[in-house]
Image 1: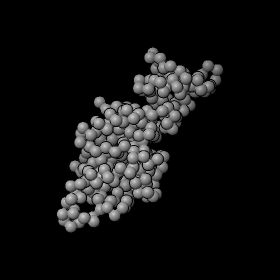
Image 2: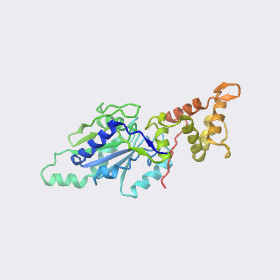
Image 3: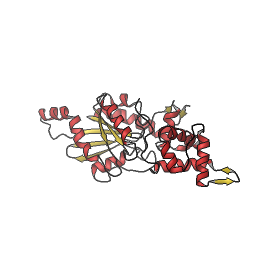
Image 4: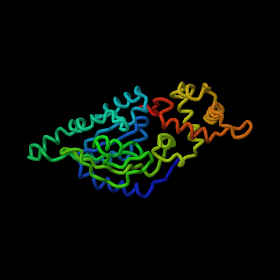
Length: 282
C-alpha cells in the first residue's frame, strides 16, 4: 500500500516549520496516546534539529492506561520527557509549564547568567492533524488562543501565543508525511480520524479494525456487539455478524456492511468501545 495524498498546504506548513525551528528553545510533540507510533511524524528528528523535546501523550482518556504506561516507559528509556494529558477536559495540562521549565533548566540558567532572566522561553508545538493540538494550547493558555475543531487540518498558519511573561508557544499546522508506505500506519491514522477515512475503502478499514480488536480487545467486541469473535472469522464476517446484531438489514438475508463499518468507527471515536489502544511498543 502506498497512499500519496499530501495536500499543498502541508508542503507549505513543513517549509514554515523548517524555517521557524531556529526561533525556538524546544519542540513539543503531541501524539495520540492510542497510536503513539503511527502518530509520530518520521521527519520529526530532522525537523526538530537537535532541539530539546517533550512528548505529550494526548487523549489518554481514550487509551488503555496499562498500554500508556508501557509507552511512557518506552520513551523515557530513550531520554525523552513525557507528559500524559486529556486536553479536552484539561487533565494533566497543568503539568506542561513545570515540565518545560525542567526540560530547559540549563537554558533558563544561561539566560539568567547573561542578564536575560526575563526573556521568555519559546517552544514550538508540533502534531499531526486532529491530535488535539489546538485544544491543548487553549487549555494551557486558559483562553481560546488557537482555532480548534474535530476535523483534520483546522490550523493552517503559524501563530505565536503568549502563555505568560515567561513562555511563548509557536502553534503550527498539523502536518503528515507525503506518503504512507505502511498499510497499518494509514489505517491507524484513518481509524483515529487523523486523516479522512474516505482515503481508504471504508469496509476494508472496518474489517481490518475488527481483526485488530479481536486480537487485542475481544471482550470489547462481545460487550458492544453481542457476539463472540470466532478465531476462524475474517474481518468482513465479523462486520456482518455485528450488523446482524444491530439489525442493519438491506434486503432479505443481506446486511449493510458499510453502515456497520461506519458505526464501528464512529463508536470507537466516541469512546463507546472502552479505553482501547491500538499500538504497543515493540
